[in-house]
Amino acid sequence: MPDLASPLIGWYPENARDLPWRHPEFGAWGVLVSEFMLQQTPVNRVIPHLEAWLARWPTPAALAAEAPAEAVRQWANLGYPRRALWLHRAAVEIRDRHGGIVPRDVEALLALSGIGDYTARAVAVFAYGDRHPVVDTNTRRVLARVVDGRSQPGAASQRDLAAMERILPAAVDESAIVNAAAMELGATVCTARAPRCDACPLAALCAWRAADFPDTGDDRPKQARYEGSDRQARGAVLRMLRDAAPAPVALDEVIADWPDARQRDRAIDSLIADGLAEATAGMLRLPG
Image (cartoon, rainbow, N blue to C red):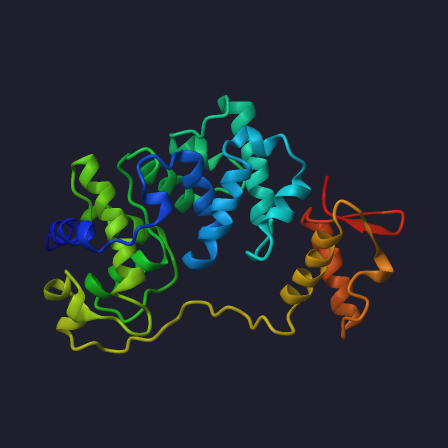
């Protein structure tokens, strides 16, 4: 495999966006919160929510001391609100198991609520500077094109980590830069719909470019339409509960004008099942 690390290391300092979680003083808790928020949510939407969250809860212990309902309220319209509950549970676990300090070890991070392989490695690398391959959607697209000559990546798999491991330099500090640079390249240059190959530091090494940009298909799962979906109904229920909190709302008044009564009931039932709402005595409220 050609040396992909050196061009990335040279490119990154001059081209990386100035994002809050990239500042050295940001801290492991800030990195962890940012990674939760960035799952399936664009950067520009995350930043103001992240700043507000950390201003209110600058440590895991500060969040753990609050009721889960407050985390759901603060999450506001970021989407996928179970992330707020998981983050609250993780904060409690960090307080109780790790003395309020976000752990550095990947296995200890994986044992926290809501943390998968990507988030655990991202915290270990970007907060603590350790050497692990970190692969997100943007990195996978860079690897698919540069290494495999594909227009889009396939389904996520452990092969992605193995491919990134082969690219990483042995030096720990340089490996963190390469992880960040591959993500940044995929987010800003090697984009899904309009890659800017003229600005890419890996253009001369890219297998997809060398093959004249073949369309190899896109077999990634497509996200379901939001408008009219159960997700939209869940969001409407949560919005009403957040606006009313800490007071509960009568169950028969919860989005009473929703056009599909069965979908409304499914939304309420699923929120209760997920721990995002509690029903008692004919009333519905945020948890805890």
